[in-house]
Amino acid sequence: MDNKGVNLPSSVMPRKFLKRYLPDSHEMRKHPHLQRFGKRLHDPNLWHLNRRSISGAVAVGLFSALIPLPGQMFIAAALAILFRINLPASVILIWITNPLTIPPIFYATYRLGSWLLQRPPTDIKFELSLQALTEMSHIWEPLFLGSLVTGLVAALLGFALTRLLWRLHIISRMQKRMQRSRRR
Image 1 (cartoon, helix red, strand yellow):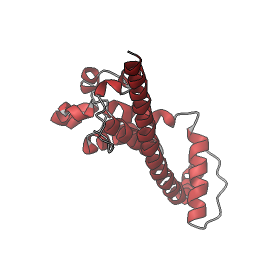
Image 2: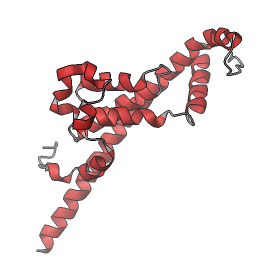
Image 3: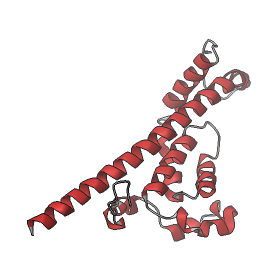
Image 4: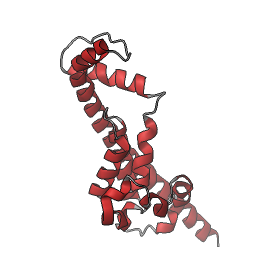
């Protein structure tokens, strides 16, 4: 029930759309990396498709995607289990950062971190060498800080936008339903 006293039936939620793109819960439970979470994978909240679960998954997925650490999928899964939100959506959303998007995203977060730390950005050549590893030791702080700030902002905006869009979708469906019932 929303704050205006209108019951919003679960049938008006955009579940069909999400079910089309999210993996099956039984298949995900069998994944070897997820097996580490044991019985926690059987929590029904991890598989629900509702406004709370999906908006939380968007927040966790965006946050995890923007953290420059290996194992982003594991981080997203752990946070989804911790907050009891939709696990598949959380894990899928980390693919916002992929081999094509990582360079511009992490460059921007590095620049933001440099600005926040009031350090001039360093020119770095991304190559596999001892010198590149030495240069990475100079950029990890601004990169991580910028990524953390960007991840938190993206998570908050993603959460709020998902809640808003979900609610607008529900309101639209309810209005259409009321119009149909008035015509009868």
